[in-house]
Amino acid sequence: MAYQSLYRKYRPKRFSEVVGQDAIVRTLGNQVNTGKLAHAYLFTGTRGTGKTTVARILARAVNCENVQPDGSPCCECEMCRGIEDGSLMNVIEIDGASNNGVENVRAIIEEISYSPQRGNKKIYIIDEVHMLAAGQGAAFNALLKTLEEPPEYAVFILATTEVGKVPITIHSRCQRYDFHRMPLTTLVSRMQTVLQGEDHKVEEKALSFIARQADGSMRDALSLLDQCLAFEFDRDLTYDRTLEILGAVDTSVFSSMMDMVAAEDLKGAIKLLDDIVMKGREIQTFVTDFIGYLRNLLLISAEGSTGADIADVLGVSSDGYEEMKLVAKKFDPETIMRFIRIFSELSSEIRFSIQKKTLTEIAIVRLMHPEMQDDAASTRQRLAIIERKLDRIEREGVKMAAGSQTAESQPARPVKKAPLPEALPDDVKMVCDNWGRIIKDARDMVRGILYEARPSVDGDKLVIVCKDEVSAGSLKANEEDVRAILERETKKQISFEIYGPARGEDPEAKYPDLESKINFDVEIKE
Ligand SMILES: [Zn+2]
Image 1 (spheres, rainbow, N blue to C red):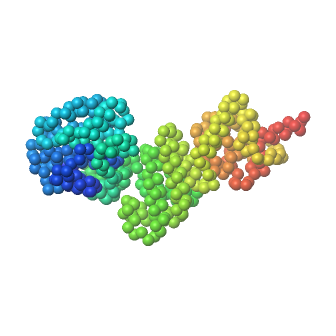
Image 2: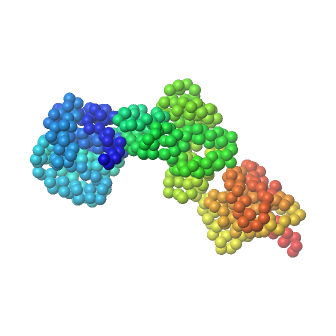
Image 3: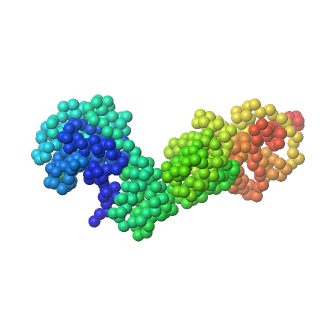
């Protein structure tokens, strides 16, 4: 027999089996029992909250010959079975999102004038009805007309995940029911019920993790559970395996990340991110989960030490909770809010970017440096400046670029002519002279920082003078990249230092700008 997904296999057939939508099923059940049905219903809510399931139960119930006390269909009479196996045409389902949705609507509106051959009612379930409204007008207008004056035997059940896109003309003709996201506990207990019918043992911690990932959707919860069980068909499903299968990261990893942020250990944090990526985790998932972690951290931080039951509310294990309490002590709620903002921005930024890891590294740098009030606008501005420089370097060579840096990015910097170093070893000198060309080969973020930096010397050593401490920190975390570029160019081992001025510190005093010195030199000679 073909495999049937858990979601289909355990799809509720009676109102009493529907979980998480008690008020809705009670009201509908009463309507079936009292015969006070509406002609049109509008079911709204996010995916996987039971709209279609409830619509199907209602569709059977209104035709059932042996309605149950709670208004549910008996699932055994001829009508119930006929609808179930599709031999009775009393229930017609249309997917508004499908290509032929519009065609189907036209067809049903033509045949709606025929009363049902058997049973009391003809039920039309139209899923994602807002898509019809967005499409051609003719079919939709015909539907509206039918909704206005439906035949006695017709009941429309319209479902949508985007109620905002459903025109008011439909709202006004329907009885509306809002299906809510399901709480974690509901999802977990439903999964436990389902598992009783399956030959599987699953760690409870794994179930709460899956429930959190499902974000209120029963269908998502059961699909994720399905996915995990498919990998572990002959073994018990553990929490660790669940994380692995779903490509997720354990809470303790996030806690280590936050410890490093607190200690301003940028190198360690970048290394940790590397490890996560190496293990095959999706960056997007990591970022989303990290936001969830930060949200929990914020709650713990705001709650203080008083909330004893908060671990359950957060859906974290007790170990994870103890860890998080320690982490929460290191940050105040405002700081955590800032972190959430940074990662929320990152989350939408990386969705369509191919440089997911780089952008995430930059976000981590920003966590550690509150002085960087980098909003989207100023980032775009900085990118534009870098792009302009790139163009100019390509057109006019290195010197111009070095000149333009002084002119554009640091206009207020006073140019002090410091005493000339005794000698430049050839290799270091060559690097300095060809700076613009050499750094062109660097990758993404490294290149961005290098373009804003300038070369200088300290004795025999090359010094890369970054724009500021933050840039220097990011570059240090990618030191190996820089070394590779330099070695490729010089074919020698080149010793270098990365430096970025602290706030208020003048980099000129420490490492003079070679460009200005060369000019100075020339002036003297003349
Ligand atoms: Zn029945």
